[in-house]
Length: 324
Image 1: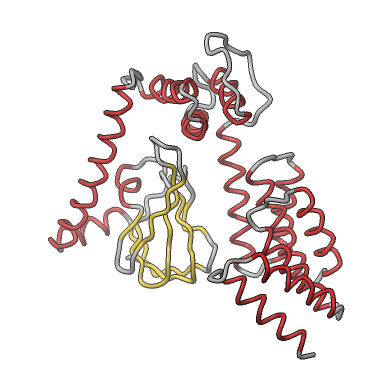
Image 2: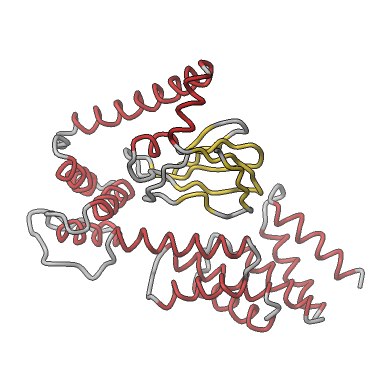
């Protein structure tokens, strides 16, 4: 029988790469399907509307999920097995027609992307060779994001493949912004493989899920483990920000201030810089240091965009400390 399941904000229904034969229909809330466009490498976000199914293709095809399903706000949904879903579709022609339209649009988009790659001279006849050639091609034409995406994907699906060493070397070059001699192969690479990066992403989102369940101590350990493992780049920066949030919610205000001060110095362009300043202000407020708290709230107001949620929070917090 189909089962009703609930997820809290920031939790994960499933990760990209998971093998899961469940199909979901969203009853209420908001869910985003996050994936990378195969042609541009850009991260895409498809919002699921109430009443829509998701996870259909991979479940029915029995292949790994191609996207990560992230819960944007508390949501409830119904989970179906493949056989349960097939029975519903067979009994409801309207659902079948709607899904055929969706799949038709997706197939047209994929066909266009493959056609563009074929025009560029990339061999896609053999899946493994084709995927490696796509990454190599994008690196040659200096499309770094696309090259990184294709090479990471190659290493995820073929961690011991015939091009694994070369893919690791090219990935290192793509991530450093340089174009290597593509005729020379390497015995190995000190970079983490795509498979490792997939595991790091899972660890990160597992910790995010723990945080959303208010298991702050467990979440803190998860984020700290990512740092201890020597990860650099996107997930290191994300994990460091989340560590500060965990410390704040664990009422370790002095540690929170110290941590976010260090983060701001190390990442002056961190995407969560303004939020970090807000948490410093809130920590000072909780410690009773009202003047410093007000100063940080004013910094946030000066830096944030008018329509940003953090602007409203900072104005409310500033009014609160000024009224004390």
